[in-house]
Length: 273
Length: 300
Image 1: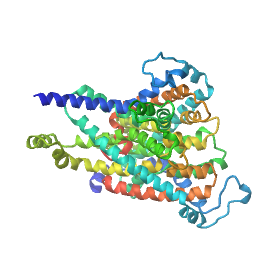
Image 2 (image 1 turned 135 degrees about the horizontal axis):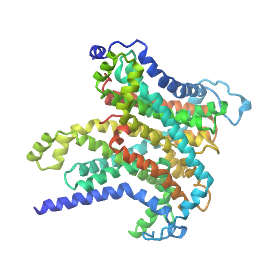
Image 3 (image 1 turned 120 degrees about the vertical axis):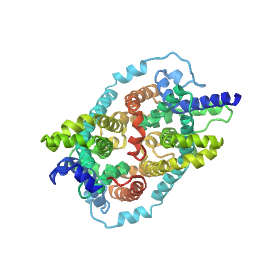
Image 4 (image 1 turned 180 degrees about the vertical axis):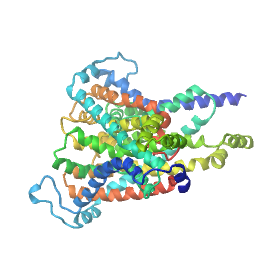
């Protein structure tokens, strides 16, 4: 009996260690964002301090940071909308039709997940330079489709396949055409899957740095690019940096918690259920 | 299967699926395939953006010859492999430990909380992970050094030394991706049928025997997925390392994506960088073929 209690305690301790492991860096960032410079540089580190909001007032007063967050919002929202608009119909075709080359097509969609952004960043930079598209929202919105479309297609194909085909057959007997069936049956019933894929698409776009770094200059810099740009100079404004980091990470963390059940599926493109 | 589905879903025109697919396929062709072909073409040219006057003449395989005989390129590939081999064992080991802790019955609330907390590292913007790394591993006031000082080991110039920087980026990677492995292992553990698990529990009290004989078969598919996805992701790894070290000091953390980025966007030698990128693409395609072949069952 004793060993049962002991095991329970060990189990609890283990879980606490897991919690500390996953949350400590996050906690450290957030708590640092509420410290003033003295507390930040204090040695040994201070665990109890008078929190200050000055870092946040600083960054929200900073047009560059504010503008970057707006840019990130614009790019992530529009690329997500576009991915769903293009990806959901494709997912329907993959879920419910047979045609030649279907599995090749599906594999091609999936393998886009594996490709390193640097492979596309080079030619897209040259193309954008020639087309005068550098430093526009458009170029980021389009290039982000390369990783968002596959995720939408994959998750939605899976979702649409779980919708009973009898519904579609019944609708066809009533004379509905394929587009009406998609709109009236698959979109509403597949909404959970569409929403999950949209959230993933938003998270990935919001977090992206490499494309944003090379394809934007001044006016369209996204939030991660701005956060990175603080890292030069001698005296680093750590409080401001951590406040910016917190502001960037908070919305996607909330989104990720919403889809936490699907996290593995989203990251592996359904390799494990 | 084909016949069954044709029977289930008859009466659509031959071109119906085409209209549903065309927009997505067209978009991916334009933004994915066209640039890839364009990179392939560039890789056969001398193409330095800073010297447009020289033109961009075709030079055949010159770039490839240069890349393949370039020590630094091979070093960056070697470093990437070493990074993979360094972080993966930790991520797998911690991953399975966490998964077992979370799978064990009891302590429902705490378990649910720990399970949800795994999502936090995964969702954290990679660039911000780099920022946190810069703060934690700061030589003067970073908490890593303060901790080392407190236990009497003495601080390290983490980001300023070759080994230190490599370990620092490895730790941040392990922090971010262990939860990924844990979640996949956990998914595998929950696939073990309850009756089998309970029967096995009656037979043996040994945790390792249980793991080896009962649970392992359910963990293997996930393990393959992790091996391939983590290797692809480490070939892609850029954001976090770029923010933390820019590949330095020297070339201590010059992973392959960082190196190609530097050749392309600091030296602006697009020809050479494209050749490197194409070689990287070939490796990735082999990997993803492997992945798809091993993981996915043929789509019906």
